[in-house]
Amino acid sequence: MNPRKTATPSQITTDLAQSFTHYMQHYPALYQDFAQSIITYLPTKQHLVIVDIGCGPGLLMKELLDRLPESTIIGLEPNQFMRQQAKYVLQAYPKNQYTLLPKTVEDTSLQDDSVDAVVTRFSAYAWEQPSQALHEVYRILKPGGILLFELLNKAFPSWKLWLVKQGMRRKKANHEVIYYHIQSYATAYTSRQFKALLEKQQFQNIKILGKKRAWKFQVHAHKPA
Image (tube, rainbow, N blue to C red; front, side):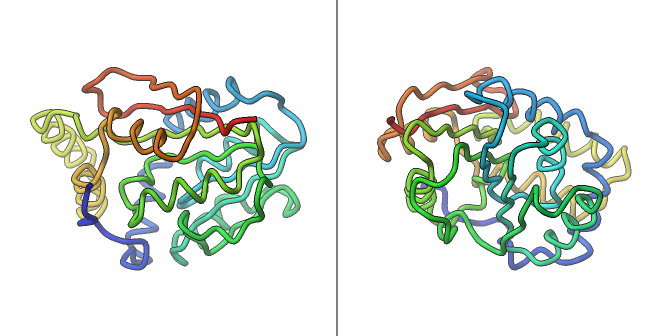
């Protein structure tokens, strides 16, 4: 399912990392809205350990740190240039509130049953081994822990994707950033495909939020208590 054809983390250059960060900082509401959705589904708001898969330049981590100052956020990001951007974005926050690790979702090196929630925004398209990735998420979650993902939707119509591309050009987005965004859909998942992957890993209470052919959707699921 979904052979990897888009840029892998190791292929992201320093210029692309900087351009991507600059472009996405113009759209803070995208991260704020998802962070608020995450907060809504968390069982508590204090002393949590939350892992952000493929945290990129740390823009979602920033929003979570603002909302959960007594929790610890662990960002997994294998690309050194994206981690550099994240360090810059998060420099105002106490170092004991967050950690950036040069790890992939397939091999987090975190302990079994050690985190309360695992989140990600638009990283699943780049997973080289999706089944292994979700097995690893299941392993590190505490019993009863929650998975909260926001994913690009493979079912998004191609003609609408073309309009997105034209809109990015009008907003003077860097060519590499446009290519990175658009090509990500080539290895994205439909909600049905991703739900099947979660079911295979024994996740429970799986909920899909979003219209069937919208540009993105959210997935919430639990590890059995």
